[in-house]
Image (cartoon, rainbow, N blue to C red; front, side):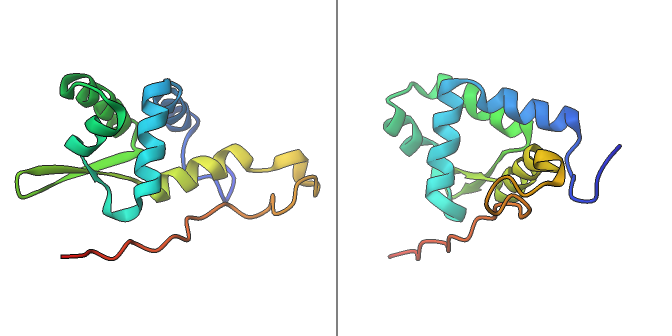
Length: 123
């Protein structure tokens, strides 16, 4: 049975959790979350993680297939961005009906939302 706040299925949540269940993909996803809505170019992520492009692409593809990451082409660069709505939906799925609806955790009744503002682009 699906609740009002649940917007991802159990299968979708499992796919997302499996994708970030790998240490490299979790680190990639966290880098993208920290980068905010502007995202990061693939080359910069490869440098940050000291990873060959082929390995990076393999892990980024898994994150994209899970629905946690998206990409766009900007000139000759591929920019990857965390999908914050999907992340929030996953967190909501995990915390939905926490403690049987009893107030056991502070703010357990609200789904965490990203409140960061995009970094201003400098020329």
